[in-house]
Image 1 (cartoon, rainbow, N blue to C red):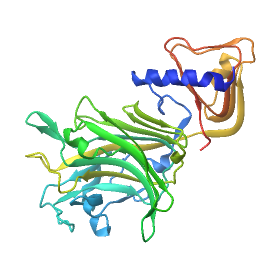
Image 2 (image 1 turned 180 degrees about the horizontal axis):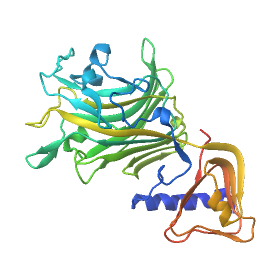
Image 3 (image 1 turned 45 degrees about the horizontal axis):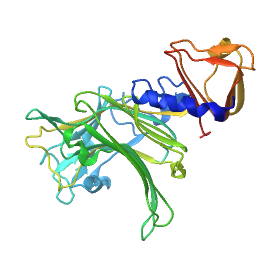
Image 4 (image 1 turned 120 degrees about the vertical axis):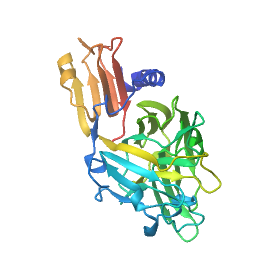
Length: 352
């Protein structure tokens, strides 16, 4: 059977299954991904790595926390014990040269627009506390986001943005996250926006969690603890410019208020931020005829993949998890068995 006849049934089945299980397509089980160490950070040093980030700092122009009545301060982003700690101080802890600003917060950003297609994963513990027995994080807006923008004298010319973590006021209960993406390309053009949210069953300040994004020209998928909660496919606006990346403990503007008796300082703690890129071998076509071929297969995005030659059979083991990616076609000739307990993904993937 040709790829076009078999792929969609298999992949739709996979997506439906993933919606209700802890098994999903991530770099942990999809061997087509490889870690991009140059654009990832384990935060294992003693300071923020200046080769990868600059610390957001109000005297350098990073004031008002993107519009709120607060400011980023350089001393509020530190690395300690393998953790990036972004601290929020209470009133009076630091001078804040900003309109109505009384609070200082921390954040980091990439020095250049180098973040593009790939799989992003941040492992973090978000701020918040219990107030009278209820989880509370009012005014806090922890963020992981990426953006590219150009402007002229009259308006924004281009704005591309993807927001894996940008809950805004929804985070007041310390359990909700809002994710989304937006696109504007052309003089004073309109935004195209996709948005989704999820609510964690437990407050996000109690433990570290994975916040994930898979991004390519044909898909944007948001994940929480390896499980997809929002998927967008095949929009032309997913072809975006390389972007700057930001990790920050934001605060809402002065119209929002902290919960009474909020203990300070508060922290957004990040264990790591990783970017995985697909291994690309897009000019190569591969034919797998036996189980031995299957076992020795080197995972990468191929031009075409063919299983079998019309005779014999190939079978996964009942514990196998295998994802095959190709630009043009995936063909199965003969018998291919995926027993109960195994996981098989046949995924059309652009060569980006």
